[in-house]
Length: 105
Image (spheres, rainbow, N blue to C red):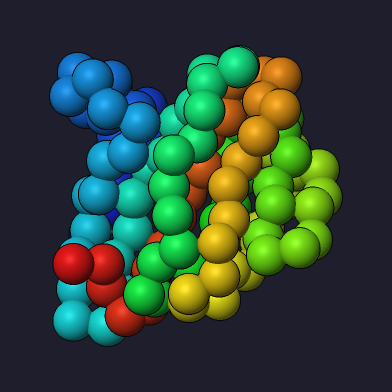
C-alpha cells in the first residue's frame, strides 16, 4: 500500500517551485498534484494518455476540445488522450489531483 497526504504533497510541490508534482508512477497509471494561482496561465498541451482530474480546491474554467465548463471543489473531469485542454479564468487557487492512464512519461 502507498498512502499520500495532500498537505505533504502540496508542500513538496511548492518547495520544488513548480505547478505539478508527480507523486506516483506505476505500470498502468500515474498520479500527480497540479496547482495554479488566480490569473496564472495553464501552459499544458494535449497528452498521450487519458486523464482524470479531481478538483480538490479552487474555482476556474476548464476547456476540453471545444467544450468549456466551470470547475470547483468536488468536480471530476475526464480528458481523452490527444485532446487539447486547459484551465483558465482561475479565480481561486486551484489544486487538482491528476491521474494518467497509461502512466505519463
